[in-house]
Length: 333
Image (cartoon, rainbow, N blue to C red; front, side, top):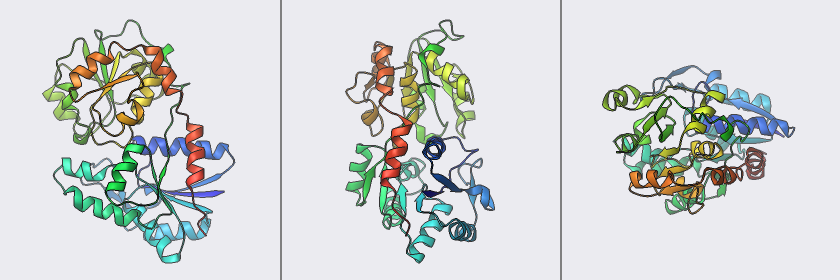
């Protein structure tokens, strides 16, 4: 098939949406499909008001129309609810084309954290956006139940995966530069990630943070004893994962949390709140600890066997993720 992906999230952005789509695209191409991308790179862009490093397409309707008309895709998948996603939705509805969407980001919770908009208002906008989709793909059962309560229809499962060849317990540094135990966070440094809930904990050893984002300067100033390593990629990131003792995931607003799978594949147990994402990835598997007391969860996770974490992560493959994505697509015409 020729599959068109319309996404406002694309490199150089670094987040779970981008990593998911790039990996799935490679898997689809390996299966013999052609993937065409419609991204901000094909449009005039402006900085996002809350994340200036993220570029948003300005008036992308013309670029969207040209791309769809020229490529004549067999299937159209709208990845995000941003300007490109809205323009692609509008064009498909106007011309009677079927399309699928995905719910990657809990915008109602994100915007509520920033006091920008009440959740009921944002959920109403998202219901409008996703309503015409043949299927709305969701990463977890918890998110599906949540969206069902908010009136979403045509919800379909679409899991996630991890690369076990990259994230490998064998990369562990037994003599790291920081005192053990090492409690690690990897991800975006932003207010909706709830990082102070982790960084303010009274824990033994060291707290290590990998990532970039708008909250980084303030958190560095507020928590001078925390080791902020900035951006790490590929083997450098994998080594940091494998050398940690517990991965702490303080977010309450993620739909999944790919970083948890990466940590588990590296042999690192997870500590998190019992919320969507951690409940689906960890739950009663014995590879992490979920507790409203995050300190208690972190100390309990410290006692869990590392080999069990790796075994659990291997259940999540990118090839299965890509095949499930294919199963959920709808013919455009």
